[in-house]
Length: 130
Image (cartoon, rainbow, N blue to C red; front, side):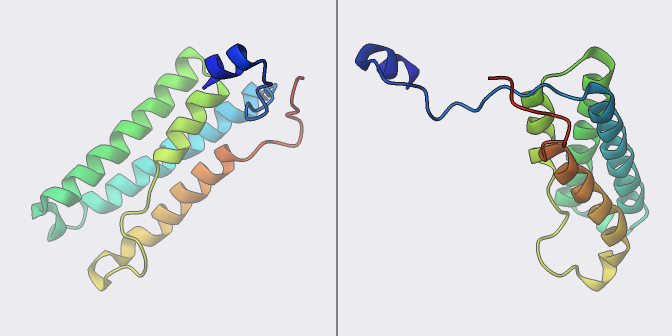
């Protein structure tokens, strides 16, 4: 779409202004999300009945992958877009009310979702650089 704006002389009103990140705080948030996902996987692994379900194992693998992405980003550097991509990948084990046999995942699930939401928000000391 930006090529159309160039051709017709329009402005890029849809583009978000760049943000100067608080890298130290964002690194702490990535650690929090990584740890929350690791705890969630451990609780899920303890549910022996659900371990026979391929979808359960796939969700655990998804959380492990996202946790690994958090580690990779905080170890090698990151952009705002990269941490947002990771944060928006985190989804609940189940939507809605949890079945009785998986209620143990609720606390670590809520912690992971809260950590992801924290990353999605602009911090007070992060301002657009326009």
